[in-house]
Length: 118
Image 1 (cartoon, rainbow, N blue to C red):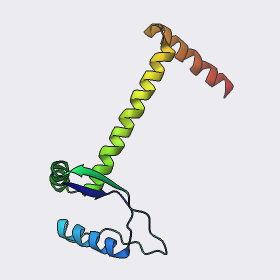
Image 2 (cartoon, rainbow, N blue to C red):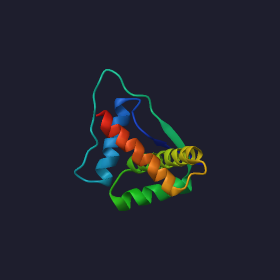
Image 3 (cartoon, one colour):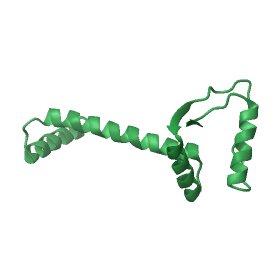
């Protein structure tokens, strides 16, 4: 069995009210912001195994955050890691067989050229 974790937006006002009730139960005195508008954002969902969802719930509760916030942070970290990996591969390709000293010289030259143009 799998559970669906909503990652933003609500399909109806009823969904917003339900999430506010859930937030209130988990964090008394706090309410999620209730946005009333003529349109609603489409629901974005991911499907995860029950064991993963339960672990995420435990971590979120221990950290005083929501499952949505924890999932968003995890996805953002993964996207950042992938970006850094890609940039690293591209820089390795550009570097070629240059030594560290040669790379530093190229960087210093680029900095000096940039300063003279300013």
